[in-house]
Image (cartoon, rainbow, N blue to C red):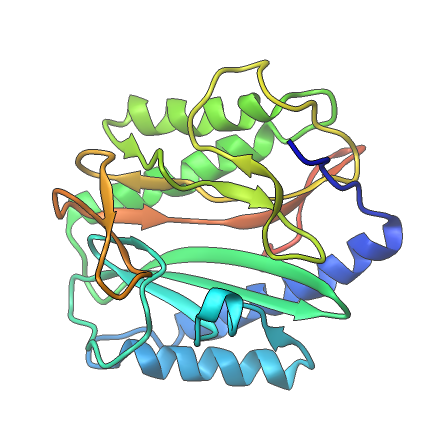
Length: 251
């Protein structure tokens, strides 16, 4: 495994800026999400807002991707491509957004309700948020990466959901994806030791049905094989001396 990068105080400050931008963009997008709009409309707003802050939408150009956001609706797990899809009442939409400023990245995601949603969709969103909180709580100096993974898995399983096992969170810094991979399943006390200055993108992906996924013909959009709902939340966090600091936290 490649070495996990430890960030300097200067690097962390740049990441705070990148994180604050994507957190703010998500706040703005939350006010725009309603039945009748297209996913491409949301993406165009995000692109404009990121650039207005002097940052770059880091997803644009990543492995040939062309958009500022990934927008994943209902059974879409992650990497949904913005387009002419019109949001309907009862949909849920995962909004994943990244920025880069002064050479450093921030990456965050929230799953939103479109109008009134079902009780089962509400519960899935609540549980995925809880799983993210549980994972972040374990992101402490002296713990192991497996402590984060196990905490996410425990919340999912205890509420009757499966976790996606073929996709992972990741290290983040000057590059959008760095070492280590951060699975949403694992054993406490296993994996790399967590050290002050590490920065991770922790991102639980929970399914109401089975854990199996597949990628559509567009080469990006990942969906549940059984077409059940999926939910995605993500924060960029710093492992700090006093405990985890969320770099993409909204005020």
